[in-house]
Image (tube, rainbow, N blue to C red; front, side, top):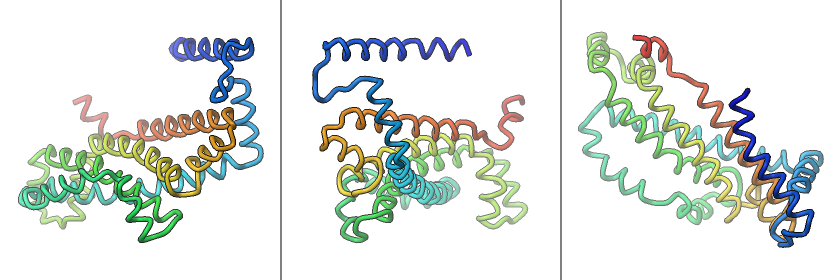
Length: 249
């Protein structure tokens, strides 16, 4: 609790100074608001349901894209990590595809799917695939060889080997990639909504900016920060199976 209070001291002082400067007339820019007005705008958007609806739309696209991209990344990363000849064959292709910014694919996905959830989730999935793939690839390559020898002796199928040996042993490092992909998912989803997709928190930010509602715009930005913090905190609580035992050993 003491650490939390010390960490909150500087932000609270900043907010108090911001409020005082705005109310005393030192800050007169149209693009600025003040904390009490931002809080009131945020509570108003919560009461009328607009903020919750936009949050649901953004999280729906971000989490769906994260799930699809993570599944693809874990599968491909496991294949590349287990079979070095596949890594040599497919590695250059993946390096070339990874160099394409996900945002640059928006026109293509828009042409293929039109506006809506599927287009946004596809762009997010493409962006999330790469950090998970790279983390999984490195994690699987670092799995204890004796565990893989056990799988060979037991003549495990690929899916069984993945489920019982590879993923439990590599989960801690894969989780790092998942946490990176989570941040990427939220950023890409909001970017797509700002650029081309009229839905979610990104589009709400554009509407607030066009309506010169600086207080609502700041409230939505702070809300986005809170969502990202909570989602990351959830992933941080997930530990690798048996991680405590390995650390104690």
